[in-house]
Length: 325
Ligand code: ADE
Ligand code: ZN
Image (cartoon, rainbow, N blue to C red; front, top):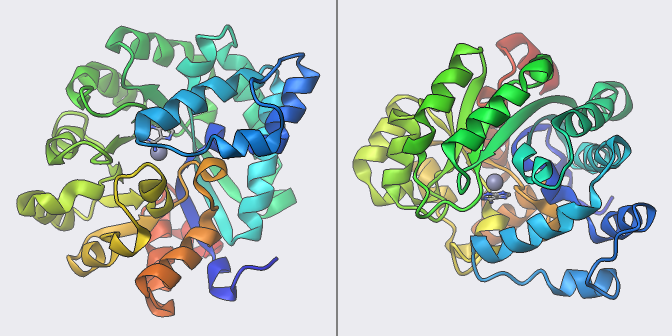
């Protein structure tokens, strides 16, 4: 409860990997109940491993720790813990990513993941005052066939999945190979987003827009390198789900004071700020608002603009968004 009041401005969180909310304490608790031995002495030793050189070095640990998520109860506990924290930080609506392929590769069924998460999400409004939507991400370092199989496997659960996303290692894995699976997802009525321009150059963002037809770009950090791309994003009011604390921890930028958020807002881009993988990157949504206020001098009116943007960029319809703000 130590957050500044402006950090609790009502907001929507649009870029949040549920597996990235796995705090060390919960990881050890789940490991114990599932009889799994983690290669870390304790939570402190695990936290000490959270020093990343780049996206891949983070992903290696992120996938390793998922081993503790086995049962529906585990996924429910994970989501419930996130929603409780998010509510405390002013999040009124959360569009939550999950990575089915990372679980299915370990022998965990998609049903276990979705049913477990759904239990926590179904009572989130009542318990935490947070409305939710689920976005299923494909791993871009896996094959297009695997993505298509995952979409097929998701058919029984599409009543609980609002859209598809694309995450994992970006550079060397451009979006184009996922054209067909995004077309198929669109035909099923799913919304489309994708990570692009996190470590990858502006060509990755162009592909996400022009080949996948995404409605929202996750990160888009490097778009300022290409004025034509900025003009396109501004013209079409394509939202960017920026994650400033993630960018520092994964060394896309050196220090938060150098984050281009303010320049991006000044350029007319529809920016939102989000926490990405908050258990690993040192802050949840309200902490992130606080951090950009402190490091970048983003003042209260601009923080309110970021919060308004988050509802505009969400998949809530206009009247639903009005109710949440
Ligand atoms: N999976 C979880 N967090 C991610 C990120 N920041 N970029 C790409 N894939 C991810
Ligand atoms: Zn992400």
